[in-house]
Amino acid sequence: MALRDIITLPDSKLRLISKPIERVDAELNRLIEDMLATMYEAPGVGLAAIQIAEPIRLLVADASPKEGPREPMALINPEILWSSDERRTYEEGCLSIPEYYEEVERPASVRVRYIDRDGKEQERLAEGLLATVLQHEIDHLNGVLFIDYLSKLKRDRVIKKFAKIARHEGKGIL
Ligand code: K1U
Ligand code: ZN
Image (cartoon, rainbow, N blue to C red):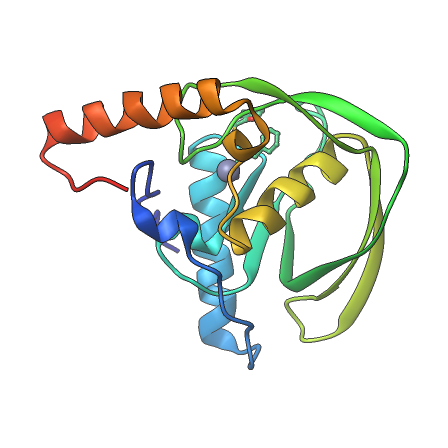
């Protein structure tokens, strides 16, 4: 198990559309272990593979209460089958946009189909924080960031801020 570097704005890889996974094998399971360790270390409640520069349709999440036991999940090729009309606003963050939080409104519940780490097809109804996190992570697989739901003014402001930081750190821009 290894901790992996999380890429941040303005890394253009964050805008890639991740490719479906064709085989669930030991190598993929090692990557899942690395992603879970990286997510817990960050700390975060979700992580998409593209955030560690792997453009494949894989995400991990754990939206369990802080006091309770961990509930790690790994979703391979996840798809949203159904979204509720009811919506919920949650203050979102993103490990690829560090220390920036804004309220985003999304469907309150979603039904998701995915392949688990044993290669079995699963369906799960997610509500509350888990529903928000799964939608945020599935967006990452499609190159969508939570700042895309904000006004152009707010989005441009945050992109500019991270581009400036990258210039100072000698990185490229989006
Ligand atoms: O995808 C990511 O960048 C991870 C992100 C997931 C997320 C958080 C909140 C709403 C939607 C999606 C994070 O985990 S940011 C860090 C965070 O929210 C957190 C960190 C420690 C404890 C609890 C939450
Ligand atoms: Zn994110």
